Image 1 (cartoon, rainbow, N blue to C red):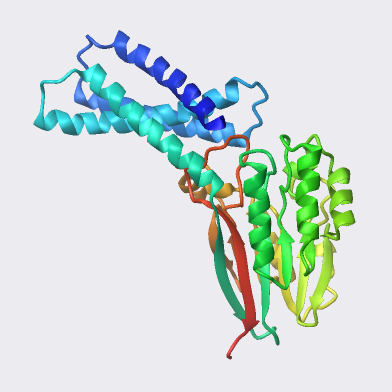
Image 2 (tube, rainbow, N blue to C red):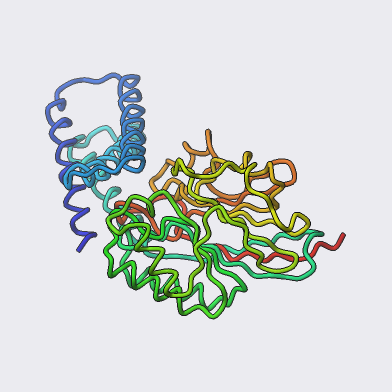
Length: 356
């Protein structure tokens, strides 16, 4: 149902573009101006994607229209490029009809890919070694579940079950388990699912956990009741050679300074879970070995990951001094059922003694 609703919004956006195209049908536009128009369409499309992902657009018609216009403008720019190539070999054609067909076909295909991509969640396997470790551990990390926002509840519960079947020694929920669109019943369903894990599960806060209709107190009470340990600016001794630091979210003004936190086991391998990756260098002041973060969704909408990567830690592995940061693409998305960037993922990390 949601898919067809987004198709309708896309067709509305395409209709707006078609009207503009129709009004300009008799205008002879020079090639250089056509190229500028294509570039402007791409820039506006990126701006719409950024605004839609960076802000919570409360009006029901503005949010989907922004996403639809993002796709429509991007596909129209692509259609314009294809049209210019076709024009080299064949000049006798109806420009408006051809552009409309191309942009609509590309748009529907792009939307279909994005919708499917949002519902497919895959494991990403990582391995790290250290002389601080005496034993081998398997750690599961899942961030940005955003229950009820972009995926069906069935997809979310299937993901949680798949993580459980990995039989990790420890599972870390890396923030944004819920958001503004999560109902209390959906929250309770996922809390119950995590409560069925046989090995310890830890939860750290994300920015959306702190702002939803379901309060952070309700969420954490439900998780605690299910047996999930809530960690807020606290060190947890996972094993003699492995320590977890779960950070309060960066958006909370009550978040402690990293220098105020004292590691009780400084000789052990320090694993830091911090929802937002932007304080990585600051967290390194306490000599962390590996930080696990999410938050960015790897952009979620093309080409935001590429744009983000120019300025911030957006996705994948980063190194600073002797510390490593791995940013997850997240197990879901936010505010819309469309993911046209890197797919949904959770991480399975093997930590083992080094051979040195």
